[in-house]
Length: 466
Image (cartoon, rainbow, N blue to C red):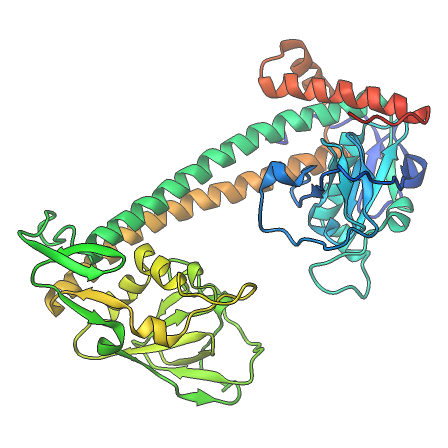
């Protein structure tokens, strides 16, 4: 995708560590010569503008209505206008830098900057996010906690950045708008397919563990009865209704410290919905750990909607946020693992969660959850069937996820190569302008035309408010 674009004819050293060589006609200057910080008063009717980690700077309600931290007093909020460069000082390291598409007010942690007339603000937004992606912004945050930054205007202002003719800046930004939009559409298609596969997997699990089909024949059972279970209507007539605590008990064997040479499992090590252990954890944050044996089923009680359910393949130790369940001879460990990871059971248990910031369930509710339990022979058949079916679907999902990762990497690579001048995209950008082949290209031209108009008006001290 990248290497079909030719480099510039000649290069020179930039003198900037993260930038390397740049095209010979590019200059290097400090960001403060291109962007001026501005502190605008806010109006009562102003809506909140949020700078997201994907570089979108828009009215909060345009993204979602809930899930944000609300400020009781909006002390230090500042006015944001369309076309401003907005930098989230604490999240800049993860890409929270972009161009405002809305008027409103923003958090005190934002640096709001207006561009000079020699600047295409969209190009520099791409450039700054590329700096974040390679870790340069994080490297400037000495003494700051991990996964945070302190990229305030005074630090941004001193950064050395390339400067070259405005039409060329616009061409690069226009090209990247077009290319990233194409890649994003491909990613969206892959992600939709992943969602469909996940839904298909859950439908298969639900049909099997609720007896909607007999996995041995592929057809429904001959007769059914009302289940009397809140989350389930009917079950095969011969299935028994039991509370979880009657077929499994909670293991409360504790150890005060991490034991060496014994596997340790934390919630973050267990993949949601699959139960796969994704990594080895060596650090603990709690004072008590639970011990488990091979065959035990671990159920994450913190944020139960995450479906952190694991069938232990060996003995080990885990954080106390797991319920360690040991089965009786009335239920198969393997069947219980699939049963507790089914969406219907997870949704039911999640309905009991208490606590706003750290919702969790408890053994009293989980243990009293009623389940439909077939014979052991059927349980084993269901578990084997689901192992086979879910493995096939998980393999497809994994392939699609790898493609998404590859596309994301390609997108970041082409952005970095273009904004640092390693590839010359001027001819490609001119071709886009001539053909008007996509709606995305048309929208980009409109946006840049509007932005250049804004830049000119800013340079005369006229600020735009619609």
